[in-house]
Length: 635
Image 1 (cartoon, rainbow, N blue to C red):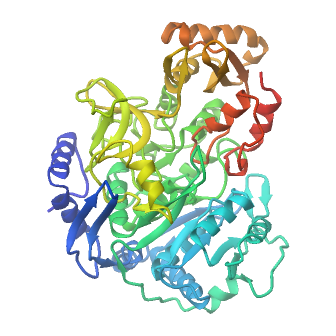
Image 2: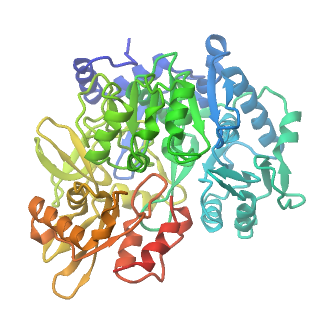
Image 3: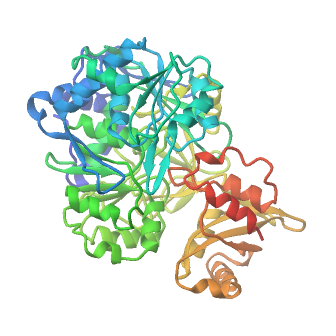
């Protein structure tokens, strides 16, 4: 009998050893005992990283929504599956039982079928964080359509490029969205995008803001009347294990977006197993991940992972600062949240506002708190641990990518001893390698290199939609027979991993390779500094020099900026050496980031170089408004 729930460190090591000595037998046991299959597989794994081709549970038949919904009907039909917390605290939260969610998904699936959507068709979902987003995703999976969720903050050109790349025939959107104090007209953004997308035959529109919108006759349909008429039962399309489940575009820090294609069975098994262990989920827990479903974290750890485990999962429409900075903590108290999963960017923003916003909120129900999206700095880790987890709820500092599908490195709470800024140990079945510049694997501990993975895991993306060559070149050409993550990492004396950032974030100054992460860590130790980002810019003598963008805390320190510049460079000199001193320092109120919290250094580099001619589509950023402010104040 395989154990789906690891309970102590010795057991983690036992299970880990078993999973890497015989991966096929390990994952077969997990898949067999914990999921619903229409037909078992002929072969657990076929793989070749040279081609590259990876197939898990080949020959198996299933539908992922039967595992998310149908199988819970008898034992958990009346249990809450989904809690929707609206943008405004004055609007009532909505609770959907497994039975109610099942019926809504079936109705939506029947609506899609009535509009001509069939197995293999691509459906673009451009919705805010409202229940219809989760329902639409599951309805696509129910009928075998491939969902392509586009974050509802992206521009018309970003939507258009994604619709065209995957040739979506139908778009699901809403009249608008609420985000803090703002009301955003999503429908007009879709209308603009569709000027470039003649192949889209239908747009289904959810009523959310009730603001007036343009309706294009013959193309646009209000969703509500269609759902009212729809039948609440829909037989699931039986899928092959390797049939596509979804395409998700990485916003990435460079180049055109990549449509990562994830398939059905392996993704289901891995996301469900990681969710259960990394959040130590128990039957009565209420789990909340603050990510948007437009990102892999939302796909894997708001929808599929939790629902496969029969969990109660929360989705939040708003922002952490509205109506004020206590909103997250109020929601935790209101819904008695057990597991809370958010981004370091949000933690730093909340920490900057101080602890008074937490003081009147009861966070005692929290059992596990997590971080995702980027490495967390030490100061933020301790603030989170002391004030949110109250030194009782352990932090799971998780590392994974759109490409990996599920979490790859993380502590298991109450099992793995944590260490600030370290994602700690590889998850079960994950075979990591640190590589040097010559392509040799670095053995032993206390080493620093480039992070690669030696063996396939079930939830890995199978290709880039329509561009397998790019998939091979990006992930499998750097090191022979390995997947290259693009990230640097160090392994400490006990074998814990710390992600140090993208390896392209290395700047050569006077012939010295300088990683941006250690310099930023040093700067962030200054008591007046909230966050920083370092880029290189051309220099006549050094080749490149260092340009620092620094966000200050609200401590009144900004009045003495010249002193601060000297103090920052002094810290860098003491911790790294004078070679890493910054030639230019710009104090700024924000840094351009992707929605998952990664700093867009490509934009910062261009500004530092005083070349703002082609910054790309900045509407896809978390905070596009900060870009102009940085340009206006460039040093």
